[in-house]
Image (cartoon, rainbow, N blue to C red; front, top):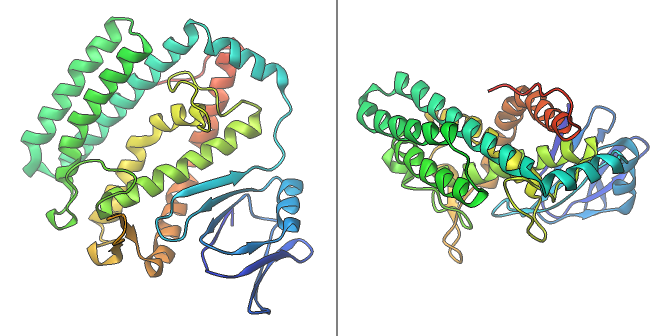
Length: 319
């Protein structure tokens, strides 16, 4: 078990030897050994003793904290990180050099290629959407040709990526049942079931990548495509872009295979947001974990390849 999901309201979490112990109203509800755990997802309101945090840092365990209703990211902690100050210095130098623009353009190109591949795969399952999907693929191809033939500023890259995403989502939204009311990408709050799961998955992948960035010794706040913004892990935002189409495929399969349906979600009367019911989160966590197991080696590879490039070593990154 590499990941532990703790999603229960008003419990008390403490350490018992090399295990986590869970209490409710003073009574022990369960115990989980820490030895096989690498990451813990805490959801909702609970009390966590400082001994738990210390144990996590001693054992190199990372944790992410999500809000109870909307499953929004609240914060995270990492285990012991690599004390590679020289690597960070090189990262800062690269962020102020032409490397930033070159790396950013590579990210955008790879993302659009992955979007194309996903849509072409989707077409094999939805031939009834040939017109919509083919139009989007052709538009993406036009943008790719520009990106591969010219040099663009960061601002121009953002504009081209935004256009590509608009064409991509014009086809992607059509893949889902009309009853899901998925018409466009919406955030904070997500307005339909598909956007709700997309946002949750992007959040979890972001956390996975922040962990790998910190473990290897890079600074997650200093990106190359996403410029510095106070409180934002811009480098993680950079790397998440590469994996968004993979997340999109996972979310599509989740709904296509009817693991999740409209009735599994509720609407918050205050924000109008659409969120997964707590009773259904127990179903979602194993689905995500099974997908993430196959992706984590790719997250690690992506971060390691970036380190090689920062250190001016041989680049093993391939499209």
